[in-house]
Amino acid sequence: MPLVYADTSALFAYFYPLDEFSRQVDEAVKAQSVDFVYWPLVRFELRHNLRRLKTDKYGVIAWRALRAGEQTAWRLRWHGELTADRILDSAEELSAEQATQVHCGSSDVLHVAAARRVHLLSGLEEFWTCDGTQAELARKIGLPTRLFSA
Image (cartoon, rainbow, N blue to C red; front, side, top):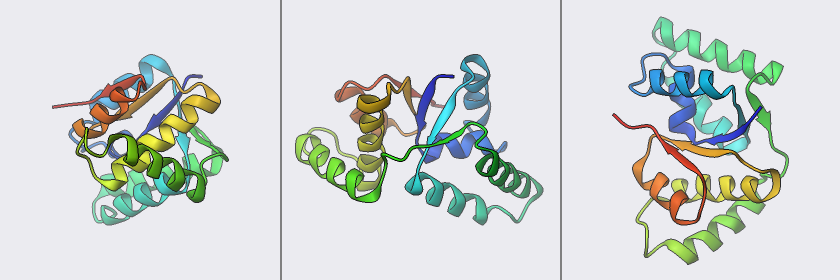
């Protein structure tokens, strides 16, 4: 299965059916049958955002689907190379290279740095995001990128 780094916006859309990008992400997953890179930052951001939505039935379903995916490693492939110290160092390098060229936030740089590391080590297929500035940064450094947009 192709390996994709989906930032939290794209993974959230995959799990939460009411997200504005959910249909697009679902169609892309079905078309390519991908596995997603999973590491502590993505896990934290995704869990945090889904916990906030456990107030409606779709949020509860999304939470249960995430937890089931984590327990079975279905579509979520843990990547041991993505440790906080390595990614912070990589993000610092990326920031030094691109901070004045592409104006995105620090979390955006972390995601793109992580995707670049996976691309170099494991042959990442694509970087997926619903965030235009992240897509711009990823493309600028040569990552194959898919931007889901409204």
